[in-house]
Length: 90
Image (cartoon, rainbow, N blue to C red; front, top):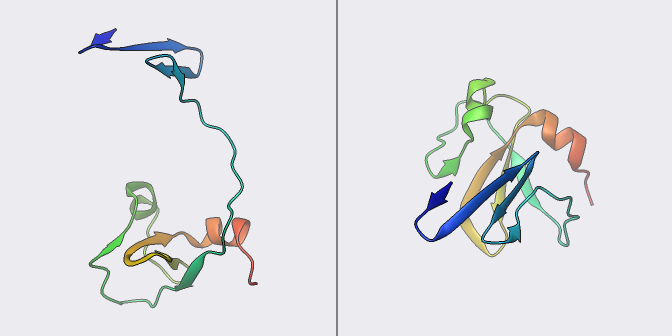
């Protein structure tokens, strides 16, 4: 399929964009994350929530709010299960 001047090649689960490998890979985070608990009923304007998390009932008790340490206005919801599986206190 040709879109503009860019070609997409789908081979199994490998997708290439103009010859660059864009398959998902695993990465380890380099920095400490900044998170706080979601407070049930709090105003969520300015906090991003993924469609998947919203469909799963978030925001809800146990969820966390993460923020970009270099831009505190950039905030997003982290579902409780993802948080429990991937984060621990420092």
